[in-house]
Length: 108
Image 1: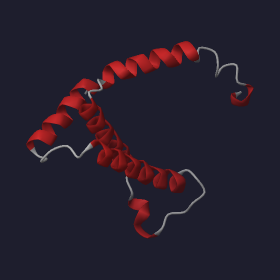
Image 2 (image 1 turned 60 degrees about the horizontal axis):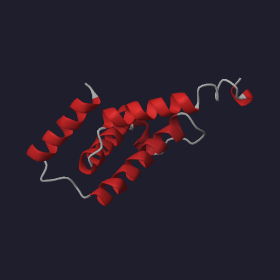
Image 3 (image 1 turned 90 degrees about the horizontal axis):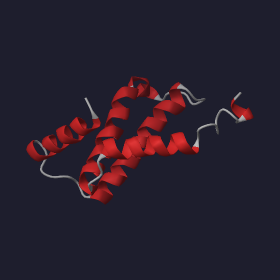
């Protein structure tokens, strides 16, 4: 699935199964909440914290997909074409960071 297809699929779902998009501020808050849920899993699975109770059942894939869903909602609401935005972002990073990381002694 392409980013364009994902944006279209989310929009179709919202318009047929949902009532409407939540407003942008609500979706931004939801995105922050979802990132926090991902952070909880990462801190416990890959960091030094331990799982509490039934937290070991938390699904990393699902949390990342939740983040992507809300990000796509925000893109749709604000008129951002994620395909074009991602292409431009990759070009920016490639130009700006062409040798930056290779020259970083901290990474060697």
